[in-house]
Image 1: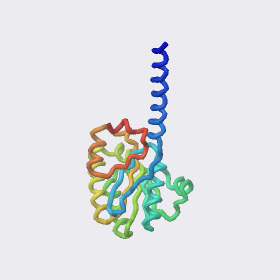
Image 2: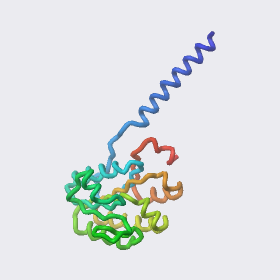
Image 3: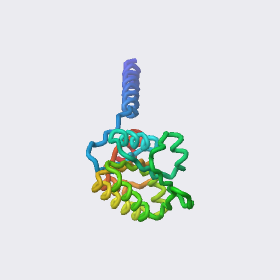
Length: 194
C-alpha cells in the first residue's frame, strides 16, 4: 500500500513539474533590442510575423525610414501589416519593378548601402535569408551578411533577420552567431541550440 501511495505522490509531483516547465517555456517575453544604433539581429523563430513586429517596433521607436527585403510579394505585406510608407525589395527572379534577383548579392548590398546612407537610423528587415542561401551557397550568403553587417554598423542602422534555425545545420548557425546578435524568439526551438 505504501508503494502505491509513494508512486502516486511521485506521479503528481512529476505532473506539476511538467506543467510548470511547459508554462514557463511558452511564456512570451518582449524582445529587447539595444538602444545602440548600428546592430544586426537574427531572430530565431519559425514565425516570420515576429520579424515584422520587431521591425515595426524599432522603426516607430526611432522615427526612421524602413526597407523590407522579402520573399513574400510586397502587396501582400502592405495589405497584411499596413506598411505603405516602407520601401520594398522583392526577392524574385521575375523582372518586375521592385524585384531583385536573389543571386545578385552585390546589387542587393548596393541597394541597402544607398538606403542606409540616405536615411539616418534606417531599419532594414531581411525576410528571406533562407531563400538567399538556397539561391547562392551558404558561404557566399555568410560573406554577404558579414559585409552588410559592417555597413549597418558604420551607418548606425538596424538590420533584422528572422530565421527558422531548423533550415541550417549547427556549424552554419554557429558561424551566424559569431557575426550577428542573436535573439531567441520561440522558446520551443531551444532544442536546436543546445
